[in-house]
Image: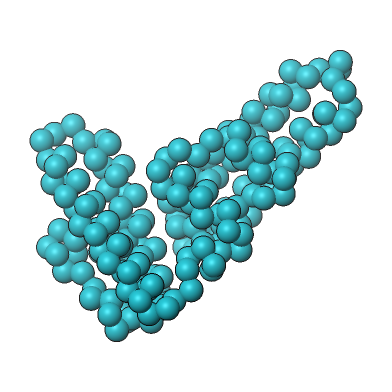
Length: 191
């Protein structure tokens, strides 16, 4: 728990501990320590998922096994959080809808159409509850959304309704500001 308190937890350590089954018990951890452990374990899971997808050799099942152990640890820690009465992760988010965005980032299914719609509705993800990996995925999909909106403005040309052009232009600027904000968060989180 000392590393959780000092902020020195990292995904690489979590992976190595998972390989040998040396996980933190978690039962004596505070809610904040549990949140820190879960966040690092989730980042490790994301790394292992990417590794499984990139594997060509015969050790894919070994990597998958590590990912499965990490997921088991996250599930265990989430149960401990619930039993301790810690406020839910969703309650800790600035917007309840951020949870679904982080989940899609973890699953690799973010898309720029949703970004554009969230920008128009003023519901872009806050980002403060995201892992480093999630932040990068959010930035990547936001960049695609900005490109799409720029292409859309160009395609509209001079015949476009000025109101439609203004909506597209506003969404583009909102998403560009979001990218700047998320990059600052990466710096704050030491990504």
